[in-house]
Length: 477
Image (cartoon, rainbow, N blue to C red; front, side, top):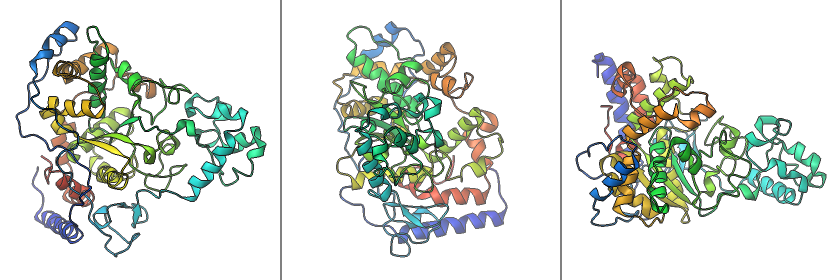
């Protein structure tokens, strides 16, 4: 880090001291039913697997791994990264950061009050249930039950969806049942997640695409009797769709009629926000982010991927620059403190939301997957993933999946396929390189060096307690 003026340094120390006092003051003992995770093993990094795409070379290396014991996916403790109770002693109290809110709350950026991650039953839910129950009896409503992007333009309505008024026009006997819904769309039971659906969930740029490749290659190795095929980017998109976006490869019945192992990717924080996805836990996001099947409160099996917050934000900044959504390369200091950019919450509150879900919902199973542990001990973490997916696998299958998903292999496939399939379709960005790290001024260390003391203190105020909670460094390195 470059040297800063003494006054700025003192300001940082004061902010850090205040945050620490608040954290200690509001902390509570770890509950006995807190969700769990295997801590990162203290072992050296393994050498990178071969970059060759040869099926023979990848298969020949299968026998090189021996796992002496099969770990459970529920070992160790995840520390409670929340703080116990609001500063005012009641829910909805004033706050500067989520550090001052209880386990089930976050500090709402606009209202500056502690708000619940989830209000399980609300007026909007009740109105939607009443309307959708009536619409189930309407034969003319079927064209509006699929993904938004598959509907005829004339039926997309306001906010890019089938407007409830259009539906009522086809089903007039539902007028009274749907009178409480003014914007639409109507959610239908066929679009609800099932108990068997598995959701790879994370804040953006924490490694979920790598995990999708690992899971897809492992599944193909286990299920295919012949030589294992290396999964292309398109094959991964087909097997584990990014359900939150709903563009490119999806069809109207893709979710409801899918058979076999059903795995989906999402960046959704845990929330119960109703349509139109504004002003609650998330804010001003795409309508589909608050619509089933991407309705987080109904998820029952989740692989939650998390990563050092400093690395995550730097990677996310480079990614948004590549998409053209961020144009000023010097805007990283303001970028890191935008708590409402997609997916609508801060890095820390995203993690806290799913910790809250794990504590409150006994039907929810979460496999907590640490990105750094996956890099350091991939065989161990892949065994945990296989157990969670109920895959009958062996060390050969696991080693194949690791080699077939290595950085070198993915970079080679990016070149061969002319870009990542999803980004070619969704953003027309064939040149966007998904695999790799930043260089020069875009390197992680350089980006964080550009952050002034005040901006860094603000980020640490909102995220530092979770950074510490998971054993990550206090300062960017």
